[in-house]
Length: 266
Image (cartoon, rainbow, N blue to C red):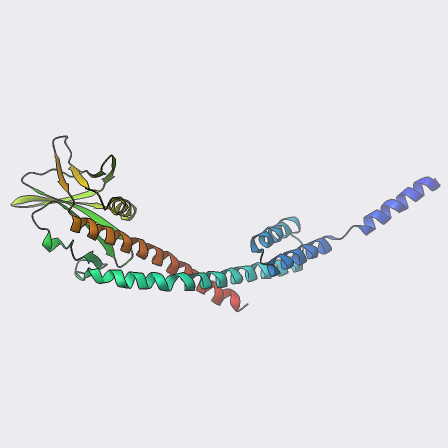
């Protein structure tokens, strides 16, 4: 009987020595705070998530954890702002210099966005011929258009760009009209446009062949880009890439600025 009593007392003592849920949750908050102070924000998030999942009833400690999570968002936003402030100005300067070689065009009656067209690729300089045009819109999107001009309708489906043994094919949406001769304009979306321009930029030093394809195997036409066209398309590619990077950084800047305002006041 005495032995049973002693065992019961030992068990009670062990149970009494176990930390409470509140103490365990509190230790996790302290651990997370230490991680935050040392700049290990992602690890701190893992600890705080564990606290919320393991101790859902410890409201006081969870409130402290929420405040700590908010401080992590604030610190990350400050870091993002500093990162953008370092990278954005030189990109804007590069774009300002490059854009001097482009002409700004916008028809306010029909167009939501204006566009920057390289002076060598202006439509009025390329009438009655097959050519590739490219431009960068106000919204930072890059557009490539394949122009066909001829005596019969082709229903343009794709354009293949070749340089030596390398080639790539691009598909787009086609628009046709007739004013004596047939005119067709196939438009590529932003990513396809940048891909085509990248091909031209990469192979700028060699002869580049362009083959347009219509809706029949006999409906095709071939021409070669001249040096001025390759230069203009390459510079449009560089401007498009700059605008894409600037747009990404400015979006990051807007989000981070909003987070600094929101969480910095708490």
